[in-house]
Length: 118
Image 1 (cartoon, rainbow, N blue to C red):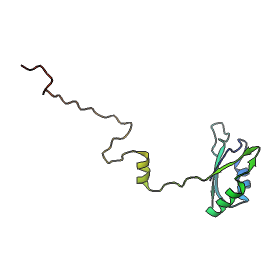
Image 2 (image 1 turned 135 degrees about the horizontal axis):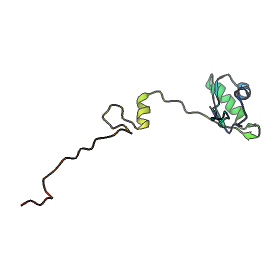
Image 3 (image 1 turned 180 degrees about the vertical axis):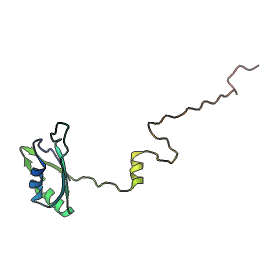
């Protein structure tokens, strides 16, 4: 689950206390900027989907320190490497050119037609 519009002064402990009352949290990630302030969103992982749904239903209209929390479901990571490669649009060993690589330009000299021949 993704929690957006999180107050910048919030800590992981505060998030755990709020969401932990509605289910067991496996992990809480609160990304930070270089100056150690929160970026304003958090990623929550619950032990079961049922617990996550309970927390979503109970807290989707919650205000925390004057800010309305926006709860969204995170997309499940795709496990198939071929699907990820096609999604990225890169050719890995299939003869397609890789981006960022220099390509040699072949210029063939062609003396047929177009010239002044007598």
